[in-house]
Image (spheres, each protein chain N blue to C red):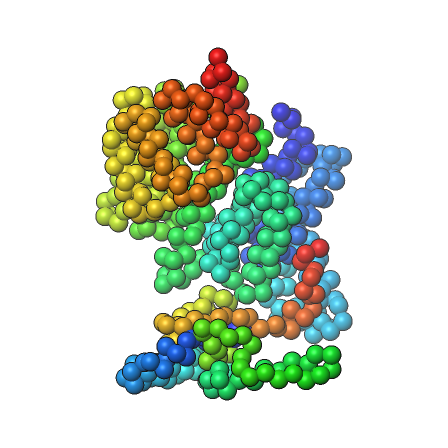
Length: 420
Length: 127
């Protein structure tokens, strides 16, 4: 670990933790995604240059925002000083961007007004390609690097950089607004935002880069976003369902990683280390959502997590109830991944051979051929069923796909145990 | 911003419509035009003659090549357009959704190049 006052570490922390807040504040100022991003990047570069000699300021994020705002104003002034812009220079009050950027009263306000929800709806606009939406949210609100996002999506860094550039260009060219949509467009738009929030959480829960199994920052970011959604849309049960689901999963974070950084599976976790406050909050949210009588995929998944939270240990879990909830989920949201999770529950309720049989539809679809967890699950069920040779082949297949160090160590340990 | 709403629909499907159904669509267009006009968003609009009336022109190596028909033979053909003034894409999408043909054909929403866009070279973002 680096010392907390190491300037580079502080810049990285600001970049990660405050990225969404800073970027959203800058976009509101200048009305342009890319210009705001550029100003933020420049400010961080200045911080990297100055802080090692000048020392880290008392409020690093406020310093970065102030510097970025000055960069924005300088940039706009340069633009208006160009030939053909004389009229605007003479009357800058006529140009809304210049007017907003030079409002002095706001310059040192920190924290700025929270505009992350607007930014979220902009990034999740349905006019953007699906694959671009999550990438944009991870970049703009999660503060992830292009490289990390590329890894999460299993594409090259160059491909991801191109995807992000294209999406931001479309935001500007097509006039995608920086605001929360009107009531009649909200339902359609919310589905996308919820899905992206869930994917951001997953990226934090099983970070694809490095050995840190759980990057709490991203999970916290997803939970914060889900909280904002619940606050803003109190009558939307799926927003509550999503927050409940994230809280119930996040409650297991301390029990999920072994002291050596290894992965501890749900059934082996020390449940005394689960975060009871988070579980209680998640359960209360879920109950509130279910009372609306409008069930949705997030509420059902939260209900599954709540069944686990109710049980003393894996053996006493109400597995038949988990299977029933997965049956509902398969109807609401049929997908090979849901079928895979259902198969795991079936195995717990009725044994590994039943689980392997339930896995067949997911395997047959072919959509999961390169999905790590299909092969890891198959390997585990085959091992439990005493089919060592087939299990070995499945573990090797999974190891060829794994990118997370902790998960790799777990799979290697299992494979080694088989060999003995 | 200015947005061009390009309306594409299946001419074959329209040919099979009952006169009543077609009449309803045309009435819908009347109401849509009035609403657009009332909101001050209407800049220009037109209904196109069928794709069979189209001629496509290309100049290759200085030689004029004219062909019968539209750019590409597709199931849905360009049937008309509206040029609207809208504050942002959401507003343009809301107008597009009110076009009667959107219920059976499709509407492409295309922003126009505005003066500000000409100041930025198109490639400047890819650097």
